Length: 578
Ligand code: DGT
Ligand code: CA
Ligand code: ZN
Image (tube, rainbow, N blue to C red):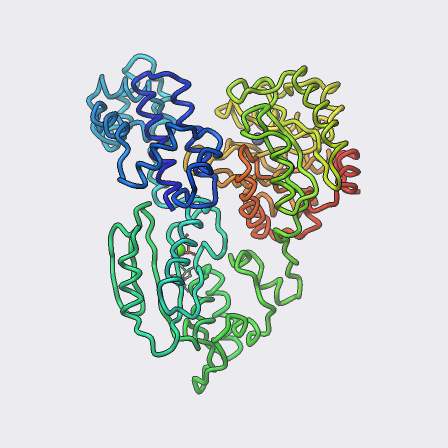
């Protein structure tokens, strides 16, 4: 699948055009196309020209470029731009938070060749001698460099999972594998992933060497780290390591448990086994005394023989799941099928790509009976936020459409911006006319902890705000969560009856599993929403649900599992639980 590759190239072209000071509309067109390509779940190579032209933001010119790239592996405009712009400058631009202007200035004045130069000069405070660079900027550059290094180590699950699934499909199709599974952090659906762990077992009498060769020679392999009969490791073009392990069918279950982890979960299980006179390893579960194998073909064996119910992979972090299993207190985890609608969706009216009709079709085809249209409010100029007048026009259009829809309902909402001073972008008079109000922060991320905490609490307390969207503002690999007093924020939400969103957008996944679990413990309601800007983003719901599952959430902890009637009632009552 070349989607991510092409998206990366288009973003790179946009960066380079930005350095050159090219036309902003042209730059934005490339970025938008990149975003939309990244969001589609089918391989772009498999699309016909007509289908490609239907992707929002892809016109004749870009679709020609894509086709040419698929055919030849070249995008001439990128190569031209690269030859015009020095390598060192490109490297500086890769640091999160360093825009093209700053990068160019640093490059021109200081002859920085790579990130190491930049890091050294920032540490020695040599940057702040330049015009326009404050010591705060220097600090941010160092933070950005650290994030860049960390980002290379761990990637968002939304990037890694599609690649992993593609590898599994490839191996399944091409080789005589009888069982194959993801293991490690991917199977536990952690929000970021270090490497891809795959476990497989061959149909008996099959030759492991041929499977390992097939693996090592996959088209997207960049480097083979090791190749053996039971384990091989490669690095794929996207820079991620992939490990494939082959095991015997009769220890498949114990190997799967072992390599799924987490390490701490496994250690706890082994301690428990020892107390029972048993021994667990990747080959099976045995008696300690005479080494008799009691099980290991299926993963359930391990838990059953220890006297435990099956523990879902998402819970295996040693955060109390084994104790809960012993006491019969494991949650009945929410699943994707429980979701009845998406409560955070953008349309063409602001920075989304689709009409209401298209969104209704998309929601229906995902089995939903409602979605909330939550375009941005006016303060967010870059996202073409709605003025009061435009919002009222939207209300009329949604009302008219709702009259025609059978068994489906669009909730009229807004994603109202929480301004720097904590006030909202619209008056209560406006907000109270809507079915649903979600509020979120899009600016002033560098304010002090106290300031941001009060901003959030002010929004939480507003009687018309139902949900706080992407509550901590993090963008994985790009921007850390802003600092807040989470205790105060949660207490305010509990008192006011305001819900928190688990934003399913792969770069956000915000709330994370730790905060969402805490919210549940305080009986604060949660919603899982995609923040879709194009239809295919709605498929990100599964990532949000996985965060919810890792947070021990059940169906009844999540508001968008409710039927439309019940949901509307809860929204009217400010979501209040009691
Ligand atoms: P990651 O790769 O950092 O995203 O997270 P994991 O959990 O996939 O970690 P990884 O790839 O190092 O190891 C995969 C699984 O293999 C891990 O979850 C449990 C198992 N494992 C690895 N090393 C050890 C170990 O030293 N002891 C035990 N008990 N299990 C291990
Ligand atoms: Ca791993
Ligand atoms: Zn949004």
